[in-house]
Length: 118
Image (cartoon, rainbow, N blue to C red; front, side, top):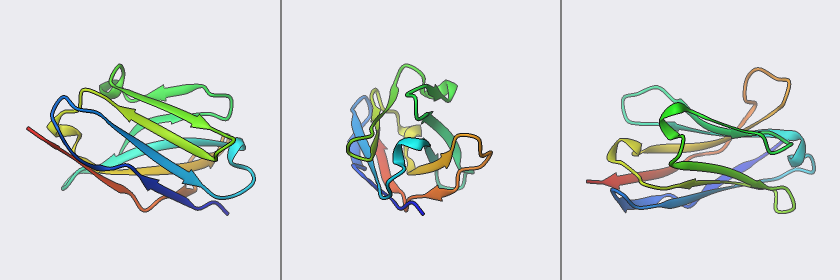
C-alpha cells in the first residue's frame, strides 16, 4: 500500500513558476513509476508527466519544455517543476504511482490546486 500526499499548489500569475511535491509512504517507492496528472474544471483528467524507477521521464506534448518531473528516492518524493505557467494550466494536480509493468496507476494522492491568473 502506498499513500501519496501532494503539496506546493497555489495561486501564481501567468509566466510564473511553481514546484509541486508528492511525498510517498512505503518502503518500495523506488520501484514505482510516478506520475503527475491534472484535471481542470469541466474537463477530464489528463496526463502531465511520469518518471520511472530508473529516472526515465515522459511528458505530455503540451508540457514539454515547461514542466520537469524529478524524484528523490532517498526522500520518497517526486517533484513537478512548472515554469512559464499559463492560465490554461489551472487545474487540480494529482500525483500517482504504479509498478512499472502495470497498465493503470494504482495509487493516487488527494490533489493540490494550481491557479494561474492572467
